[in-house]
Image 1: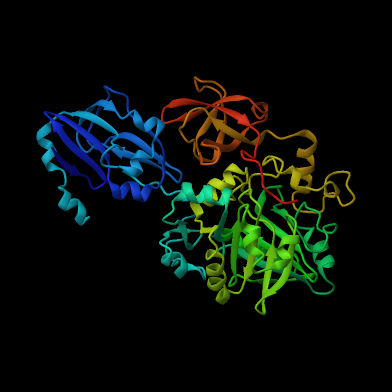
Image 2: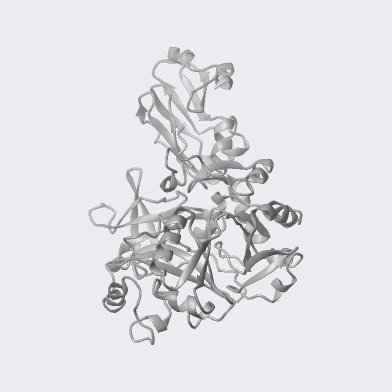
Length: 120
Length: 390
């Protein structure tokens, strides 16, 4: 499993085949502060690259989360409904936001590597 | 991911560098995240985080730097506090003549249409009035008051002084170490006193819904006093993020969001702040800008009114969200002016302006949020009981 990143602070992990998991990076979670609400697009929704897939709200602000690749929503993390703070506690683990089916799994390799993301 | 600025209404002018309060270095050393606010670089949160800072203030004591706000002294050209009070009554619909010396009061500067130029705290002192005004309006407020009262009063801008707020149920236990007389003060008492020989204005007030104190003091003393307060185990530094959620839960207005020059005190549900003596039929009725409009609204009512709103579910409803009477969204009845997550309430809270027919308590409404309709209910404010020591 490889994890890649976006300039807008999402992480995307290619699971198997064309399934990928999306969340926000530790840096983004830190910037946003205490998350109090998460709302993802409905399962089955098809999204173009760059479209908003979820909104994450902290006490301070609401932030859109984008999919960097065209995809269809496969599942959403229901644990975030009761405990949205999982995003702060474990942003790249239990705080995952949704899984998607990528239109083109090859395009995954165009995203930033962990090393390139750190350089931002 | 896109970070939406929380205080979008107060982005500073492009060319002006951001100012620093006397506590800037302290904020940075405490690990604060600094953001632009009303022309200043201010702490929005510390490493504790907004949620915990909010809870800390509700349960213990939080220290806020509010030095960006404007402190003014309004001194009569002859006489004392009574003369200043009489002159100031020509600018506000509040009673300052009957306000005893050493007492503070919430006030509204009105315009000729009855709209609100600013909301402020004003204390009657022995020789003058002490006012604390909003940061974004301090220059215009000072110039306006100076011009209007030119013949009667002199306005001193104490913008170089620091203002600290210590808020929360433990605030009094902490402040008595510096000011023993604080224990005997009541909510909205204000005294000119000294600390180590320097002039301090101490009031038992604040803007969080909690008991607490505000201290106006010289800039060069601010950091030492702040550090002394922070040394107490019950005190933590609190940023603007928690200040916003605290005041929202307390049902208190933020100027520029919940109040503006097109909104009257009657629409803003601030009639409680207009004493009987200044209302129609009172001994000093009228006599301030916009008095006719406000008198008329007091008699015949208003078309829209500020109300408290509790959304169903967990999604915060923020400023700008439109409100409807029906789920289909055909009848628009108002707009959210402030909203977010209330850590003490444990869910979303908001306030907004709705048409008078929809302003009654428990009226069900709908908020249009990201293309769906979220049920909200008109509720009484404050959303949390006030902790004032009256």
